[in-house]
Amino acid sequence: MVSQDTIVALATPSGAGAIAIIRVSGKDALTIAASVFESVSGKDLLKQKTHTIHLGHIVDGAKVYDQVLLSIFKGPNSYTGENVVEISCHGSTYIQQQIIQLLLRKGCKMAEPGEFTLRAFINGKLDLSQAEAVADLIASENEASHQIAMQQMRGGFSNEIAKLREELLNFASLIELELDFAEEDVEFADRTQFYDLLERIEFVLKRLIDSFAVGNVIKNGIPVAIVGEPNVGKSTLLNALLNEERAIVSEIAGTTRDTIEDELVINGISFRFIDTAGIRETKDVVESIGIKKTFEKIEQAQVVVYLLDSSQISDLRFEISDKLQNVKVEVEKIRNQFPLKPLIIIGNKADTLSETQIQNLKSEIPEILLISAKENTNIEALKNQLLSFVNTGALRNNETIVTNTRHYDSLLKALEEIQKVKFGLQSSISSDLMAIDIRQALYYFGEITGQVTNDELLGNIFANFCIGK
Image (tube, rainbow, N blue to C red):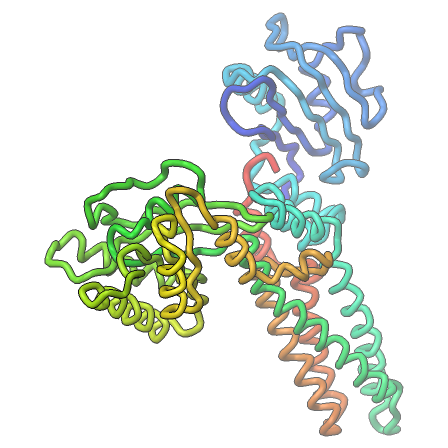
C-alpha cells in the first residue's frame, strides 16, 4: 500500500500566512532537497547531521524562489522513520506552489491524505491506535478531547490492550501445545490461572466499552435542545449562554422558524445548543414545519432544556392557570416520548417575580431552575447542571477513555469471544474448540493496535487525515 516514492506536501494550512512548512519524506528526500537548496554558508546538505536546521535559498538554476530554513531528520529517527526534510518558507501561496512544483519536477510525488502518518505506522514509529490519535489531536477543539488524544497518542490505550493480548497469547500458546499432545491427555495451561486472566480481561474490556459513552460525548459534543412555547426567551437564553447575539430576539411570537445551532465549551466539554421553533398550536404552515423540526431535534439531542416564561404563570390566578397546565402537559409529553433523556425545566424572566411568586412557582414545579436570560442571572447554575450529566470522573482520574468507533466495535467483538472462552472453560469443552475462540479474541485485539491489518482498513483510516500529516 505504501509506495517507495519520496513524497511532498504542504504541512501547514493552505492559504497565505507568515510562514508555510513543506514536508518531504522518503529515501531520496535529502538528495532532492540538496538539489534545490543553496546554503548561505556554502554547506553541503548531504553531509549535515540529523536534527539540524540550515539557512539558505530554494533555487532552480539561476532563479531564486525564497530564503528558507531547512530542517533535516534522518531515518529512522524521524516522524515517518524515513529521511525527512521540512522547508520553512514565507507564507505566500505563490511561493508555496512554486517550491512544491519544483520538488515534483525533481522527483517527488504528491502525498496522499495521511501518508506521512501511514509511513510512520508501517515503519513502526506508531501503532495504529496512536496513528488514529494523531487525527483526533488535530481535530481536538476543547481541553477534554485534547487530553484524551494526547493520552492515546502516548500509548496509554495501546499499552493496556497490548498487555492483555500478550498475557492471553501466552495461555493461547499453552492451549495450542496441548493440541500437539492430545493423545496423552495432558494440560499445560493452569485452568484456574487462565480463568482468573479471563475474568480480568473481561473486567477491563467492559470498563473500556463503558468509557465509550463518555468518550463519544467528549469527542463530538453533547447536543442540547432548547424547547418551549413561543416568545419565552429561548433565543435570548442561547445568546446568554454563548455570550453573543447569535439568535434573533423579538417580541413577536414564532420568530424562530428554523433551528439554530452553536457550540459552547464548559470546563473542557463541548455542548451544542439547538434553539428550536416554539411549541404551540398554529395554522402557520412555515411555523408548523419548524415545530415538527423541534421534535426531530429533541430526538437527536442528549439533553433537553424546557424553557417557560415564569412571569406569565407565577401568579397562578384563574385566568392564567391554563398556561401552567399547558406547560405541565408539554413537559409530560416530552418525558413520555423521550423517557431516557435528561430534562431541565427552566423558568425564564425570574427577575420580574416577587418572593411570593417564586415560592408559588416552585411549589407547582419543584425541579424548576429560575433564571433571567436577559439579566444573565443563574446562567452559571444552568451550566453546572448541564455539566453534571457528563461523567468526567474518568477524565479527571486520567483513565483510558475510548473515543474511536472502530476501537469500540473491536472491543465488543473481543469481549464476546472472551466470554465464549470463559463459558467453554466452565463447561470443560475440548482445547481445540477453545483455541478457536482464543484466536478470534487475539485477532480483535490485534485489529485495534494494528498487529492485524489489511489495505482496506488502512485506506479507510488514513483517508480521513489531512494531506501533509
